[in-house]
Structure formats: structure tokens, C-alpha cells
Length: 69
Image 1 (cartoon, one colour):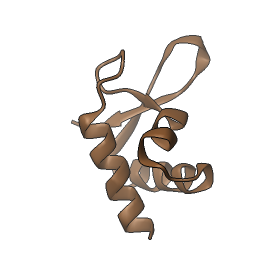
Image 2 (cartoon, one colour):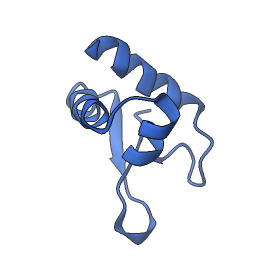
Image 3 (spheres, one colour):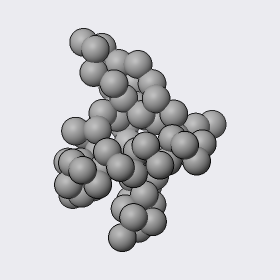
Image 4 (cartoon, helix red, strand yellow):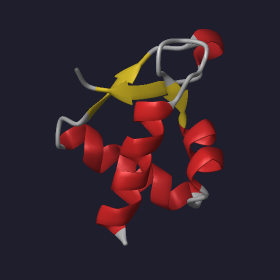
């Protein structure tokens, strides 16, 4: 399920039209993919370690993620 979940997150980030050029918070990813919070958190860490996504700052101290270009 982890690979399938990671692909869902990558697809979501690829199509995300948020307010800051594809930057989505973990909560937005959770809502958009239907995955639970623990799975989203685990997958985001794995994807970041694999170099497929990167952390991106966001207003009000909430951390966001986007696809690495």
C-alpha cells in the first residue's frame, strides 16, 4: 500500500492548484487523497528522502510540500 499511497500523493501534488504554485500542506494532501494522517506523514518523509518532493515554506508557520523540479 505504501507505493500506491506515495503515487497518490505525487499525483495530487502534480495536479494541486493551491495558492502557492503547487505547495500543499499535509492536511490538504490528506483531504485530497483520502489517506489517513499517519500514512500521509510516512509517505511524505519517504518521498522527501527519495528526492521526489521537497519541503516548501508557507504562511502562518504551516509547512508545505511540492514536487521537486
